[in-house]
Length: 101
Image (cartoon, rainbow, N blue to C red; front, side, top):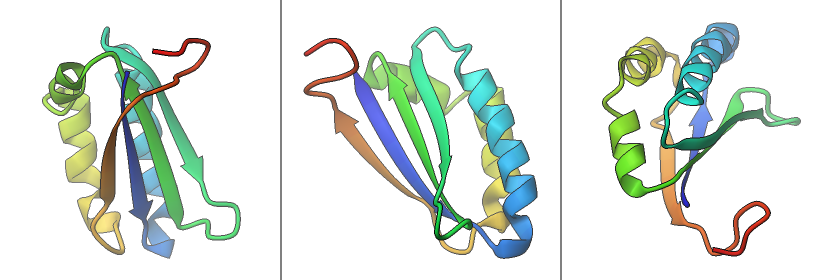
């Protein structure tokens, strides 16, 4: 698996529209054949901080995701909502889900 975790700090006044845009992107991403999961998490003590946890079968599947219409629409929609640039960290899984590959 190829996993990407993205931390996003959102301007307080933009939390609601950010969540709406991000959930639309997440729902569409889950329909991609190479996507295994897409979780959207909001920090409990800092509600303007979000974590997007994305898992793809391969790095190529993630690269494909970044070219989809829904991702490009999300990226443009949320650009001005961020309090600072988002931080994405890419991972190769050692032990994922119910399997150890």
